Image (cartoon, rainbow, N blue to C red; front, side, top):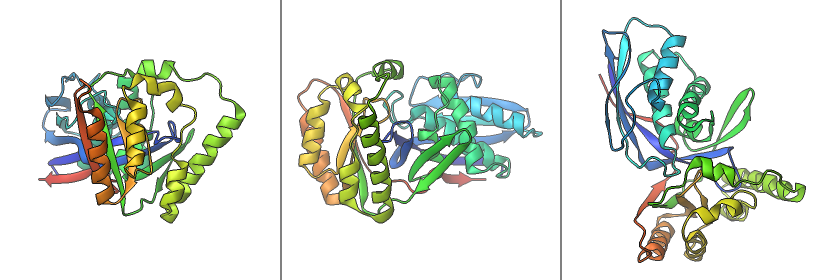
Length: 309
């Protein structure tokens, strides 16, 4: 293989109760990337569209990942990368993760699939560290594995892929406001009462159990975050109103995607998803804030190959 084109999905991380541990991949939103073998060794990012990002591979999320992989697996060729950002960086939908995970997947294809999905996740975490300051795995693992993923452990890294009920849908709104990850981290509580921690652990267990057993009521009962969401929601305009209207329209639950400002909801079935889409849209219209809406199935495959040569 000398060339391939891929789709690397946007992701929802935290998923309410699963702060820094749970993520899911979307089907309708993501980045399109190409990878081409070249005679000249090294990594070049020859084109970026859709966002103003650095093309220097030493600081670009995709470039950092590709360089690390070629250092680990030396070859007699180079790789040119192009990136089209399908959504806005800073949305809370894993923008840097899509590029980092996409680079890990794409470079691995040109290397003859030398690395496992777990190793690809480790490489992709380097891209997250370069752009976000922390080598987090929730977004990149969801993009690489697809579906829902649980980061069970970092030392050693352990990723668990979780089944997805067939009718589960995501409806999300991305208000065009800036929420810096640093600011979102700074408002987090430094200490958590034991009773709150127990409640949160129980919700994570309930959510995962509901996903395995297709128990939508258990999923709904478990999509509750009593630790992070209360501390962060004031950063997102009209969060409570959006959540209230989404649940009134039939959502199983709603929460903050990543560090925000995107608000995500989970629901059962296309008809309910369309009702929630309209309810959230109506909530934000007239608020003098631009926004984008998303309606998507869960992407159970993860990164997809679109073309090869």
